[in-house]
Length: 325
Length: 289
Image (cartoon, rainbow over all chains, first blue to last red; front, side, top):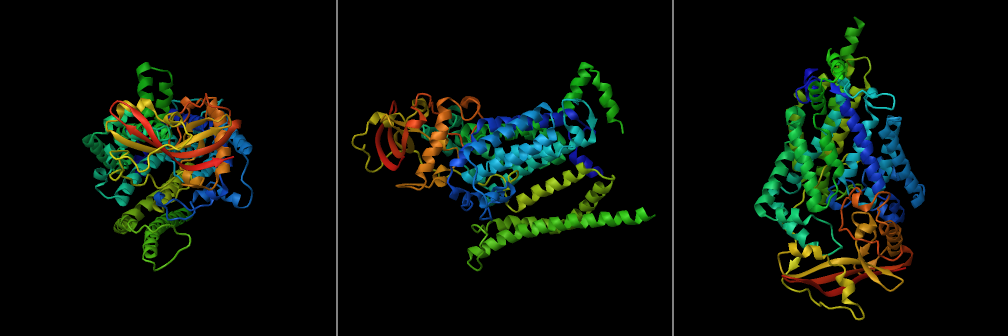
């Protein structure tokens, strides 16, 4: 199965991956969940009119389905039969998610905690998405990350009893591959959407420069979406905005290459992380989770091996031993 | 000997299942825009289907053609994948590595948002975005009687003035909070949490359908904002909202218990080279408790 093995390999390294990488995924997934659910007050959903949860999908979301599918996959359909929860109940659910994520972060029953955070999180986020009539990629990414942690290989978790970051194992590739696949597909599909929805000349029609001028001018009023004034000033340049849009389209379209040419992964993920940050600066979209997940895809096994060898750390012998077939 | 004869059968069965599922995914991915196109032509009517998206047929056609042309190679990969899956006695991790990407591919191909995966960002452009600062003043620019200009001027952000290059007139819809002490203070839809409060609360011009709910929600969130929080964390370091509105310091606002109403105004400002000033305001909607 060399083809598949090569497919999930990265950095041209032997297949075994350091547990450190899974530990980072676990910590970032729970950390982001704590961060998001400690920041957003989802109990606000209790004050949203019922009709907002049963309206049709928004046309701009380009869905074929009148009822969004997350109505079912996030268990919103149960409110077709029972009353919607009060603000206090939602608040308590949110505390359960934060508590679960906190325990998971500490390495206490991480698998169970990931399932609890994923299912309850999906339910609350599903309510938010339905009430907002939006797709919100950043919450989707956190949910995916929690799911990946919930289905981790059994030994890939750090726990309060087990912490061996430099242990190498083939199985530890799995979580990494899933996240890489998810993100690169997401970017590639976003590029295809641009071509399908607008056309191959999307980068000429994008006109980020016009948007930037608009974003600056609308900032005269407190009622508007925020933007970084200095960043938008720079992006107001037509040539720069067009080149940026061209790079977005081409690099998003090429994203699946990262699955087949592992050495390109750092370049892709650093580009995409900076792209999300610039979208936050210019458009005000909070894509923190996307940025964090992109940075999770850097080759930490290689970095750990390099560091361990350089420091002549004791665990070196362990992972060299583990790397042997 | 029996193992040698049974294993290929299981592997072949699994390979056919994988290939069958991929074929089904591609078939539905083509069928959806095809049905949408027929609906657009008013030849059929499908109750569960949203707006027809005929242009997606081209992308689906390319996908189907590629699938047909490469079907042998894809089937070969399915066989290798099934070999790999059945190689060890039982390794759930390998099944996870196959099933989850299949779910992702399916959700992408069928344009499903399933909570943890969706079709990606839609196409967008700004080529037709309207100028925010326009040379001509909007019609009927004036102030309502008995309203202070200063109340509306509070909705301006002086820190943005140096970055604005054009002169003329700018107008924006501004939300104001009314308190029982008689004051009217600027706010924004960030207090409503959702991305599109206008549709969520039915905030049509001159007609607010769920004003009471909006007041309850704003009161609920204002309590935390007055303390500089969104929920548990300080607002300044909180995870950004999906759409991040301009930051407003609500700490000096009266108590949420004294919130008596919410109004939406179209506020017009004159933008000069050295200053910006409010020159008019028109009431769009008013919600009272």
